[in-house]
Amino acid sequence: MSDYQANGFTSSLLEQWEDRSTITLVGNLSEDGFASNLVVTRQRLKAGTSAADFAQSQLKQLASQVQRPNVESQRTFKNNHGHDVFQQIHEFSVETRSVKQVQAFLSNTSLNHATVFVITGTAALSTFAQSLPQFRHFIEHFHATDDER
Image 1 (cartoon, one colour):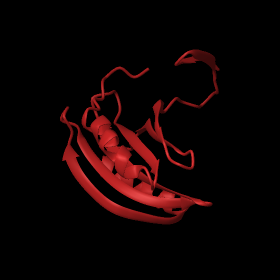
Image 2 (cartoon, rainbow, N blue to C red):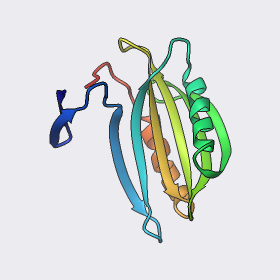
Image 3 (cartoon, one colour):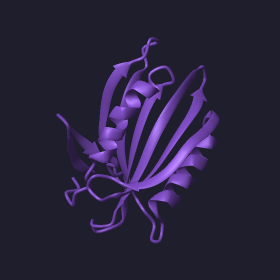
Image 4 (tube, rainbow, N blue to C red):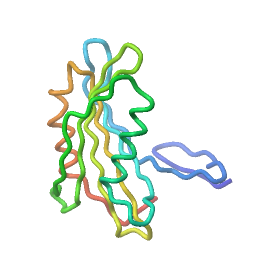
């Protein structure tokens, strides 16, 4: 096991485990107490897999785990730092709660291996429209660097 250090804590990293998280940000609360949030993770891509391909595989996995997944939109664009972005907005239910997400998939091949950063903004249905501009701002200004800690 190796030492693991992150945002104000240390521990031991389990063997054959790796840190794929980057950050979690929490924002507005809905009337029922659900906090809008942004989570950034990263995954290694298999050779020849695009960010859009990875997004489609994630959507299939989501559909097997939640109730009534509904994809509202999908688009590709370049953000302010020139990263190619595949974005989808979808809604689903888990038990009695319905949420809406915007997910952006940005590939970075400047690292020693191909990586996809997944930015997921989640909010209650009642606060999604209010949170969406904030989620989009974060995605537009996201910049992957070569610094992988």
